[in-house]
Image (tube, rainbow over all chains, first blue to last red; front, side, top):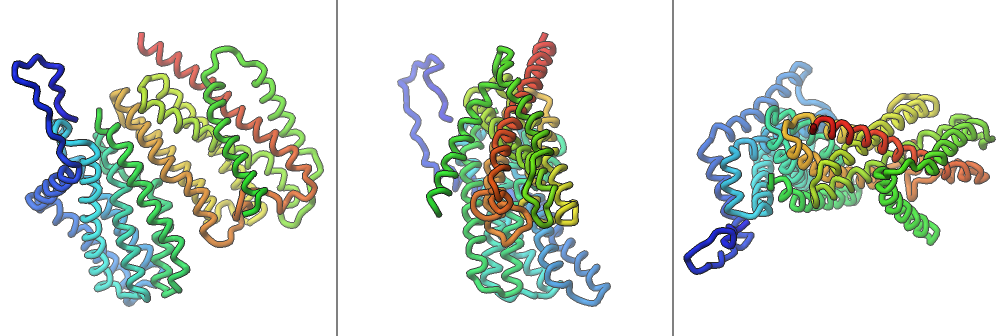
Length: 243
Length: 251
């Protein structure tokens, strides 16, 4: 929202603010997020440690019964770990910003740029976390995947989907204040269930090495769902931001 | 897709839009509106009695439990209708904020929750006697559970604000977001997944496989209208109460 010059009596000749292109705003915000993340390495380290330790706990409990879990349990556990890691990763996005900081951004950039940059940043972060999680997971708990390309594509779609869905939810939870992470889980889970159902189904198909045509429709629905959620966030976020 | 199906879908859409528009008029009505309320009583009481008494086609497995069709299904229909009304109020709120619209959205959502609970209870009973379990991992049942979770989360979200305006705006955003991101999928996902026990799985949700002589259909539609009117009535009463409370708290 540009500064309204008309409301103040000004002696200087009125200068029109040059609109900055949306894309530039997004890249600047994205760079800012990455820089912040890099400076406070503790948050990133905590997230990686969270994924690593959950995988290790799974490994320890399954090693009691000799080796790797059966494929359905493998699949379910992987998605549970990724889901909770995603909620933890996205939750800090809006919550670590103080109200003063928000007001500052509000005067500088469009709200659409903020939500798009945040979604993009969360998507990149979650893709990295998902790939790393999968790597650790296969190292410790074996690799029953039969159709690796399909599984990876599904994993990436899932990470991006988690990011798009949870970004707006984290914005909502940050507004509520107080118990942010709990509220985010409560608000986020029901919205994510349809996505999770599709993801788990496709990933099961990839584990069993079923024909690709079986998963086509689900993948398309996932893609459509991602776009729908992204568009909804884009439309609704300015209202959230206005407060 | 046959032409009959297309006509059915278009009619369903027109009925839904009219229902949301008319529902808002009825909920916000200032006069007593005794005519439609009398109609609601007649339709609900008469429909329930007739639903228990008319002769139904004796079919394997469902047998007499098919009468639940006159209770279980209208509850879900009216739930969807009143939740649509709630979302529409939320959209209106974001465009033009007022405490009135927030109260209306909240009360409509609460009516939807009550009807959803009733629908879950009747559906669960029906499942126990026909499928042998209170709950099955069926896509449609999962969808119903998710819908209830969303509105539970909506209430939790509303409870976690101190500031009234903040609460109204943020909960309106969540209401729109959750409804638009999930409810359409409740109609799409069951069709994507394989065979299911729940009727109405492919194509229009219908009961043509049960209804042999069209007698049930003639009773079913009036009962649906009765339940939808009942949902609006309930919302009207509870929102009037909420308005009074709001006025009382203000002074």
